[in-house]
Length: 429
Image (cartoon, rainbow, N blue to C red; front, side, top):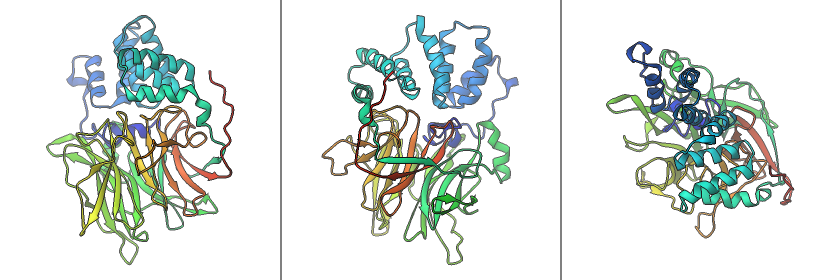
């Protein structure tokens, strides 16, 4: 999602702008004393695309300003534009000292651009300063043998969904897919606020005929609101749905959190107005995945007390009420971000993470819920140096769909499992 990227949009909805924190408050260039103050204000509000535009103007007059170089690098990293981020990190770190986290960020960007050997060197430099960082340790370990992350069991192909913007997080519904799409901003509120930090996102449905998508359409006016709608999960034969939706923080009109909403389908095919699933104000809950019997729910949250930026949590339906969320634990969660959980027909958990090591960006993992082994990286071609997330299995268990920004924008790909694992020889630069 260079978008506008999912990273920016869905991470989550809570750390990044599209679902997030600056909608509803415009910073007037006439109200501040300098471009730098405006740029810093945008940056602090996670409005990275606006901040980058202003920093690019300022740096023309101050080309050797390391703080500006690092700010631009961070903007492009968060916008999921790794080649631009690499350029600015390389310039900033060429002659100057920097904080350890910038070394880690540069190494991560190098993974995203496929420069694995150089990334290993920078992760090693970072570990000399922060030797206990599990993210860096996992990254270095996986980069020792990157060929093990290439798996020829899978064949992947992009679905030609006719929406020009980003599409991601597919779920199977009826004879097609429901997904999050960047496109129509039908309401007046959306038209007035979209310009602030990129497009709004809604839920769409596209029919499939032998994996060939038809024409996508708006899912339902009740499920799509004046705010952002994100990943959904259906259960009870497709008659119930839990969706992600952005909402104002109480008393903070320019800040939003994400919440889960539940709705039911009426006999006429329309949906009831979604109701909030959990009561919370100071953190986000997003990316739902539910077991087929509708009794166990997984989701991602930046709830205080977790292991990192966002963790996976679990809740059970007991006597008609959802229990208090329980952290899925350190076997799954890291000091990075764990997001976009999904469950196959057997109840196996899949999720995306940037904290378990791999090829770079968000990677899709399979989890052992018994806790007896570490999550397994699904490898290339499902994973890539970019962001890969939102995997869902078809009921026949040999194929499915996932989201990736490997082509420069978040799109939905089809995958099919063909044969047994055969590791490929992969050149490492």
